[in-house]
Length: 78
Image (cartoon, rainbow, N blue to C red; front, top):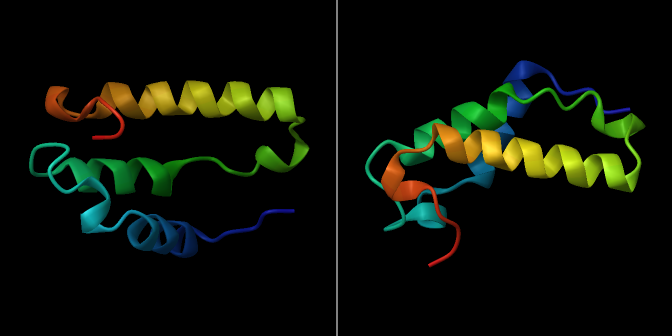
């Protein structure tokens, strides 16, 4: 069972998405949007998901994140 406190989830989001992760891939403020989004995700349901449900959840969550990003940062990769 996944049991992260809000502090730990926020800390993981901050350290997992470093400045070099998106350097040059979006306007200023993009990293903050990503970190805030990841820190707020409800991860408690993941444990009960099968692989198909997880892939669907991941696709939906990715699109939700993409919709929150500035237009210059709504792409993946370089």
